[in-house]
Length: 479
Image (cartoon, rainbow, N blue to C red):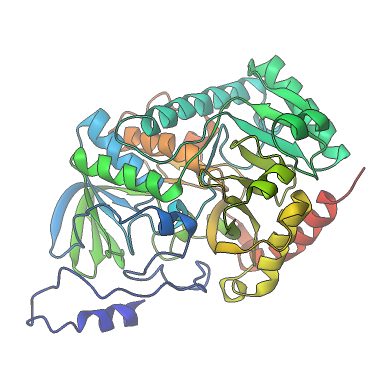
């Protein structure tokens, strides 16, 4: 990255004058956060459906082009970072400077599946109870429910136009063994949490919602919204600037030192001196960003594709009567839905490494998943194909945390692929902590750091390969 930045400085500007705009770098499909020193400098977006159909990005405040003093520097311009900036201004009267290495919302926030569900992290309610007990699980459920209200109020306000598709979420059992699991989870949600889910039979699923051929049953959750991922990010961006935050693309943090409690963040165009730093870099967190985040996440690749618009005959064959967000019950799950323009989007696991991300076998694997669910779409043309990194924590749950009470450093990370909705609340909670109003946040996701992989850190990808084999064999068991 340093070499790339040195090249970027050769712009013909007079000596001693920092250029305001940097040459655009091309999208790097092989980028790998466990290998590369950083996410790059002013890289273009991944070629996603969301970026391709959102229209131009809103105006920003330009790259950092001189040394500057700020109250709060937010590192990362995705949903979490922008939500943090919004809530710092709206609830605490603090105007933040948001630093982005590349283009605004360059990472997870323009590469996800656009599914907002009433969840965060990878664990189900029954797993919360097993880990922490019923009382803590009820507290987590209340937090996630409040988060969904925060998210819904934001996106349905006049400041957003992100094509919301409401109606809930269908959690579709892909075999009989998983049918029993969703039935048990449904009963738990109703009886222990008072959350009104219900089970749909295969016939009801196929007749009234969608003919998903793998589905043997489904659990309907009333809270679920599909959104246009890039339009959501651009809505956050416009609202943050409206409230007084500044947003600076092409400003990667290349160095960090703390002097007398003030954080000096070095960018290509100048040093940002901040009294507090909020980290919101998700699966694109550079390994050398800060020792409190180093080796605390396992970045995992997820593939996504979008078909051409379906014909009337294809839509009838699939019986698409719903635009609800859909996921199946595999550990290596598929997430999918019909988009407002009549296309179908589906995503799931991808390569282990960035170097292997372009291997066509990963695309073929995802296409086969689409065909199993919707045989009428076999061979359908694709309009978009991309992949992106998901920030998975070691214990499958996110953290919004201040790792050292003596230092004004905070992070919100580790959503495990369920951050579209909860990132709004996570940014809000991180803003509370930055403002010194974090008292009463006593749930485990607020009171403990992201766990380290410890001595297993160098072997994480070896373990990932083994686990993918195990997950596949377990997912495809029928009984």
